[in-house]
Length: 233
Image 1 (cartoon, rainbow, N blue to C red):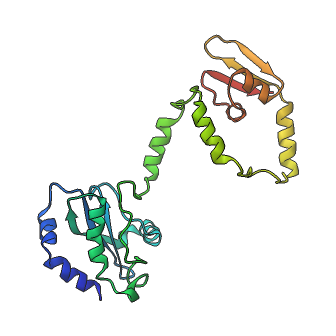
Image 2 (image 1 turned 180 degrees about the vertical axis):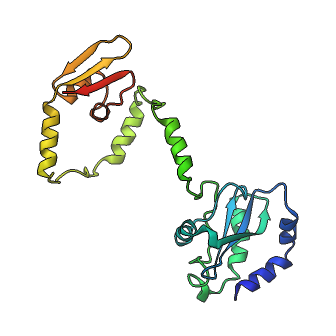
Image 3 (image 1 turned 30 degrees about the horizontal axis):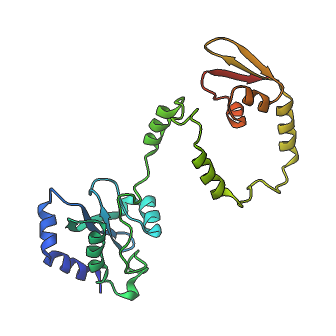
């Protein structure tokens, strides 16, 4: 079977005629991507809009389209009204047209099995300019959960989840230069100035200052505690 067979089936179905006319209401769709450079195809489905940025879930396909998006073109095989299971059942009909010998060779699809394609599926990565805008918008904004103590039930769940999992740093031997750097940082006097009251705290270690300000060692090291100006000498 070749792509032309799928195209002939696509042109002969009522669903394709509806897709060509454009459907204002639909829950999902079945699509086919064509790699013009390597003459390969990828069939999939998605629950959502055709304009929400979804591409597919196959790892090899995602890697290829991210690397050279200019070589790929998508066609909508069928618009579907129904839940995710029904959308996948419609995708399965198209996958059944692929020969077993073409899986992974002529098609990015490795199995003739409809799965994935939900609203939580993979989307195209953000552009660098978009990432920069998000970073600037979040810079200096405190976490919404900051200062809110965890419930005892949440603590118990976290304790059970990580129980028995070894610490990633346990047993590792630190380089000599890193040991010296840590040692010197612990010997420094750490200061914290309250920007509202102008009161200055001084402590011999990071841990003491963190406990005094009810914060963490990492926050003190990063000097990003909201409402305080932190430095060491």
